[in-house]
Length: 243
Image 1: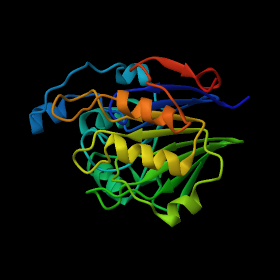
Image 2: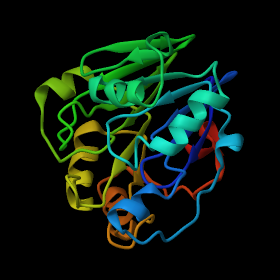
Image 3: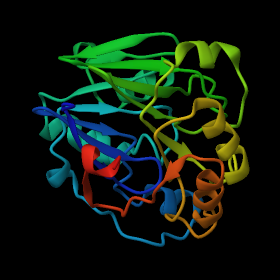
Image 4: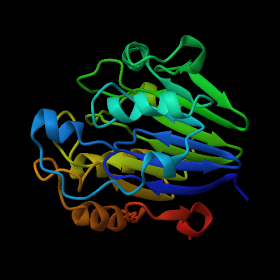
């Protein structure tokens, strides 16, 4: 049985992964900074507070407000001193400005890896307005999850070479705005990777930046890839999810 026991979608591109005794946060957006700065309309509330997240590790795939949430991260730095932060160079620069010391940061750029006990993270290519943006492969034992982060569609041989032949779960953006692939392009990416399960993300949080996941789900199933929607804030056992 895999040690990546549970996954919780936190809206947008955010996730909580429970891996043995580790709680890994990825791209969690908790505050209202986007609404305040960019005047976008929030559709749903934050499913988990910072105190409920209780992070051991915090990964930001790139330096945009809905993935590196400054007020939340700044509070986490102070309230969870044991937590280590992970990400590419753009993320490190921003976190340093927020008060994170160098010894609390683990760099993860394209082609790099980070080991968290038995869990290994691999930085994969992404095409986005932050040139340092990454996708991530989470690998524990024989279990693998590909999280796209924010990215446009690309048929990159280098990416395909970096992904293992068997990916269990793909978590992929579908919103089609602000430098992200749309649901049709996401299906094409899923067809290239051929996972056991495809999960759409990066929709449903802001009225000005969302799309229905239904066409993505139906088309994935039509091409032979199982696809499911995760309910925000609900913890899923991955073994059960893959059945």
